[in-house]
Amino acid sequence: EVQLVETGGGLIQPGGSLRLSCAASGFTVSSNYMSWVRQAPGKGLEWVSVIYSGGSTYYADSVKGRFTISRDNSKNTLYLQMNSLRAEDTAVYYCARDRGIAVAGEVDAFDIWGQGTMVTVSS
Amino acid sequence: AIRMTQSPSSFSASTGDRVTITCRASQGISSYLAWYQQKPGKAPKLLIYAASTLQSGVPSRFSGSGSGTDFTLTISCLQSEDFATYYCQQYYSYPSLTFGGGTKVEIK
Image 1: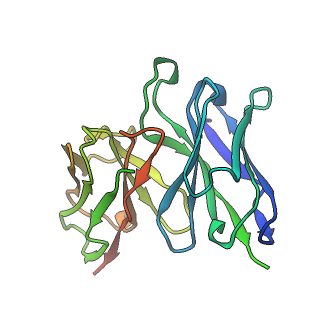
Image 2: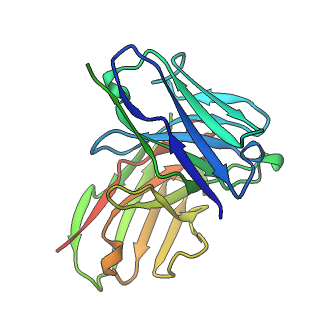
């Protein structure tokens, strides 16, 4: 079965760090464009970061310089390292797979989503 | 960044109704548009990609249309399981991806 399972969320104080994991099964993370998307309580969806199959990484301005996306091909797992956390980073964080054919440079919609992991930044 | 504006933000409808949600992009995005359905406490679910292509397994009562800046999602005959929040998303300006603010469909 093709699925994504996120872990690593929790309560963290402002200024702290947290690493989220997203374990994939049924497909290869490194063969796809993989993103993190977040949703603040009661709010809409916000794209956070993407890692291309070739390894290039990109970030939303709101997290640039504080968050780092990476992957471990041997574990077929995606990560999001979050540093200097702020109250406004409080959200459910989802990992998501782009359904495009990455090797052809095709981009597309997100067809597989994880169940989400909650990050709460509060003192 | 490309701004996506959905309307209405919420509305009430009855089972069996035909409903339409609109999404407008701040600049042309060709057909690089997706629609998602989200229920409370759940992850979004892909309904339509490339503006009008139905994702596998999605009921045919869902349809999408449009290109350029104006898009619509139509549910031809609203079912009880369709009460949810719907989001549009552009992927034209990859990697800078943006979502609409969402449209909540509630039971009348």
